[in-house]
Length: 256
Image (cartoon, rainbow, N blue to C red; front, side, top):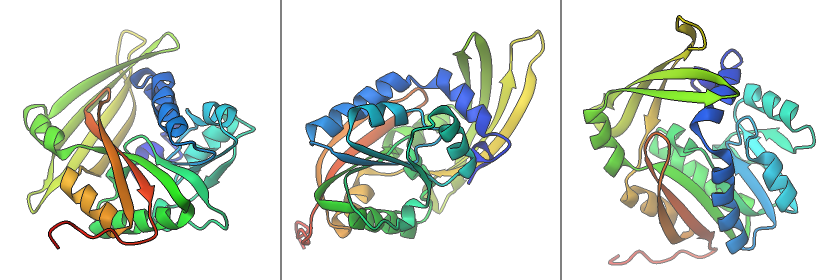
């Protein structure tokens, strides 16, 4: 896990990203998809500091927020005391009940670095879903992002939230030429509310971007039917959202 989600920097994420992401628009996007597919019980994987949690709880019968980071969950529990939050790993979910809908939000599939990580995650989610349950997740689209970082290795984003201005300086580069879709990311976070910029945190991580073909292949292998995809821009880069249905029998791969 990168430093941003740990004990020392979780508060940086929670505050600064309020200025990066329009969480109302983010929630409305997922709410529409969930309502379209008649969601009742929702598991949001990578719920982070709970920016969508209260809205989900208000609009749906049953909501659970899951995150790997205990520090992020502590913030979520502080902000929304009535929320149902648990710590867990998306690669090995362990529920005694099933959900009608499971989401992975915030492009958190980016942390599934190895092929086995994505396979274990999809298989784990399949088991946690009710029959014909819906699985919705987003990925950083390699076809758009890899050419982008070749031209934009150094990027600055500004966050204006609660009458405060923050700055994030990021450096992106390919991580390993043998694994063309891995990206090394280093960032520095500054408080710019005074005359001098004050460094408030540094972070680094390895991210994975995905091609459409590898996602579709892994969905088939994990017994998911792809219903449709949505090309979606975020504040930083292009993503692709996948809407899938759990199936209990293998779908033959065309041409096999």
